[in-house]
Image (cartoon, rainbow, N blue to C red; front, top):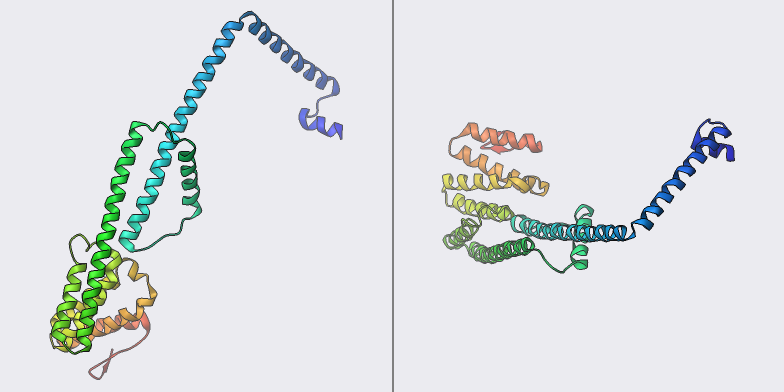
Length: 284
C-alpha cells in the first residue's frame, strides 16, 4: 500500500532518489523559513508597516469591490422590474421567475441588504432614473387599464343594442369602443389585438346584414389580419375563428363578383382544415 502511494506521488523513482528529493525539498523550506525569520527580526518595524499597508490596500479593494457589486445589484433589480412591467404592459402576461432570474435576483437583494451604507453618486443617479422609469411604466399600465375598462363598457352597450335589434346604436357603440383601442398611445399594444379583432368582426356582421358588403369585407379582413399576427397566430384555440372569418371573406368576395379571390380563400381553408365550403351551389 505504501509503495503504491509513493509511486503515485514520485513515479518509478528508487527509495534513494525519493529520499534525496524529499531531503532537498525539506532543506530548501528550512532555509527559506530561516531567512524569513531573520528578515522579520532585523527589519521588524519595516515589516510591520508593510503588513499594515497591505491590510489597508486589501480593505480598500474589498470596499471598492462591494460598492461595484452593489451597483450591479441595483441595476439588476431595476432591470428585472422594468422587464416585468413591460411584459405586462404589452402582452398582459405575468411571467414566472425561473432559476436563471431568481438566483441573481436573490443575491442582488442580499448584497444590498448586507451593504446598504454610503451609496455612490452614480448609484443615486441610477436609482432616480430607474424610479422615474418605473413610475412612467406604472402610469402607462394604469391608463391602459382605464381605457380597456371604458372600451368594455362601450362594447357591452353595443351588445345590448344588438340584442334589442337597435343595429344603428349597436354599430355606434362598437365603433366607439374600437376607437378607444386605436388611440395613438395604445394602438401598438398587442395585448388588445383580440379585443380589436372581436369588435371588427361584430362591426362587419352588422354591415353585412345591412348589405354594406364592401365595408364588411374590409372589417373582416382587418380582423383576420389581427388574428394572424404575433401571439394570436400561435393560439390554436383561435383556429376555428380564423376559419369562420375566411369563410365570411370568401362569401363576400363571391357576392361582389371576385370569384378568384373567393376560390383562393376556400382553398386556404381546405389547406388548413381539410374542409370544403359551398358557395352558391359550387364546392371550393
